[in-house]
Image (cartoon, rainbow, N blue to C red; front, side):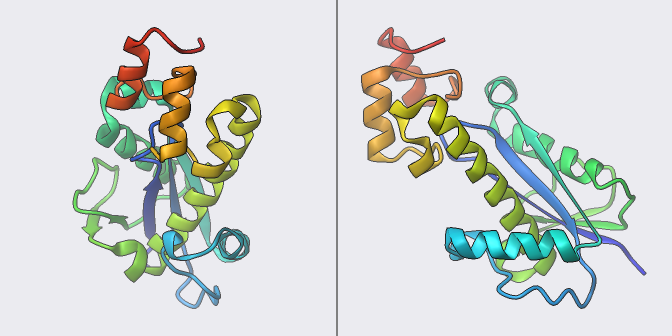
Length: 193
C-alpha cells in the first residue's frame, strides 16, 4: 500500500499570527462526512469534520512557522517550512506528498502540487480543515491577550476592523512586521512590544 499524505497550510495572507500547516494520511475508505475545502465549511462544520479526521486518519501532524520566521524568511518560504514540519511530524515515511497550490515545496519525499487540491483531493481537504481549525483556535486565544485587535473575529486578516485597530494601537508582537500595513503602523511610532 502506498502512503500518500495531503498537505495544506493556512495563514499566508493575514497581517498577524503564524502560518499553520497540516499533513494527513487517510485510508482509502475514510468515511469522513462533509470533507471539503475548509473555506467552504462553517466554523461548526469544520470542528465536526476535524474530529472525524483525528479519529479516522492513519496519521496526521501539524507544523508551523512563527511570525518571526515569516518576517525573516518571507511568507512563501515560511509556509514551505510549516509544510515540511507537518510532514516530518507524521512519524512515518510517505511515498508521495500531495500539496495544495502551484508550487512544490522542498520536502523529504516525492511531491506533487495540485491547484485547488483542497477541493479535489480528500487528504488535502483534511489537511486544510485541520490547519484552519487549529489556527483559528489559536487566534481566539490571542484575542483574549490582545483584545483591541479583534483577532477572534478576523483571525489576523486585513479586514477594515483590523486595519483600523492597527492604525489606532500600532502593532503587537503577533503582527508581521514585514507586511506593508504593519510597517506603516510601526513607522507611525505606535505599537506594543
